[in-house]
Image 1 (cartoon, helix red, strand yellow):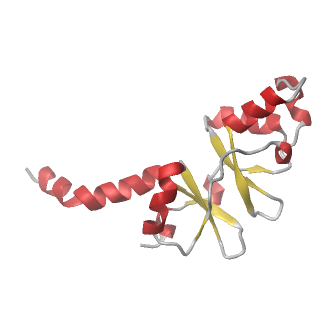
Image 2 (cartoon, one colour):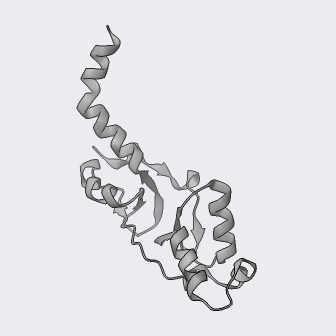
Image 3 (tube, one colour):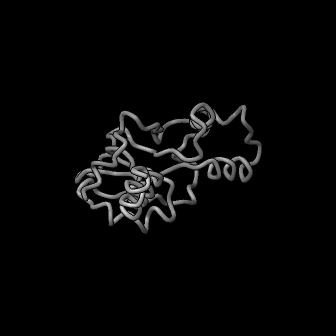
Length: 143
């Protein structure tokens, strides 16, 4: 099955640009209650994913850096410890299982590397759950 069915499109995904400041990213994460956010560049290409941990380690390992002056640090200058591997929009849902084990979401790109959205791990679990137990659930609701 093609993953487009499971796609949360870019317009519905909270993203940050690589030129954003740490403060902008922290505030966006706080507002949306996310622990990780995809990063895109000015062309719309997927660059990577930033996590709360990345920001915390940057603050810890940079002398004099506190929340007040995080507006002076660009996201592109924050080392990222996790690599959320993207997949092509033409991929099948079966290709995502190994990635979903290690990633809360899987970034999806087109043939040019342009970010088109994400597949949430919860959607993959739901798909396989319904595939495995769908008949069981249908039969139990008839009782």
